[in-house]
Amino acid sequence: MVMQNRNTLVQTPQLALRLKCAGDDPDKKEAFLALLETHGHLTRADFKRHLGWCARTVRAVAESCGADVVRGQDGFCLTVNADVGEVQHTAERMISQAKKMMEYGLGLKKRAHQKIGN
Image 1 (cartoon, rainbow, N blue to C red):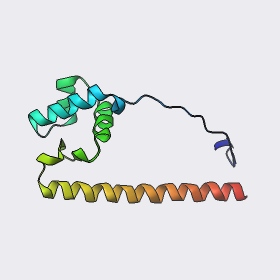
Image 2 (spheres, rainbow, N blue to C red):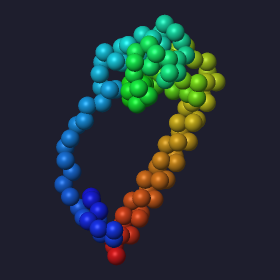
Image 3 (cartoon, rainbow, N blue to C red):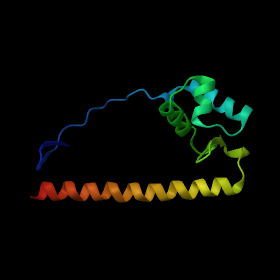
Image 4 (cartoon, rainbow, N blue to C red):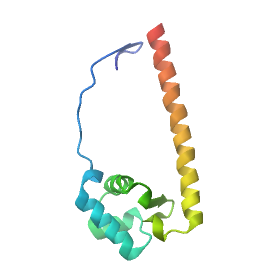
């Protein structure tokens, strides 16, 4: 859907575009995991210093690692090397964020539906 004007949404065909993401690069993922294996906890600044990556690249690669990496307030670490409390805390934080995002998404869909119905 695309907004035609301020009050009208128009259904449009979705383009099947696949943008290349840093997280899709197996060499970056391997380098990310190797640094964590060697150094333990690392921050975005640490990755920039070691690999020259921007924060967006670090985030994309970390996300591509899924539950193998704990993404917490103190940076990143391998889940196998994290203590149970850190893993549980991060899991609860992720679930809380997901609930907020779901509420936001459903709210937007409701607003779009109201616009189409008018």
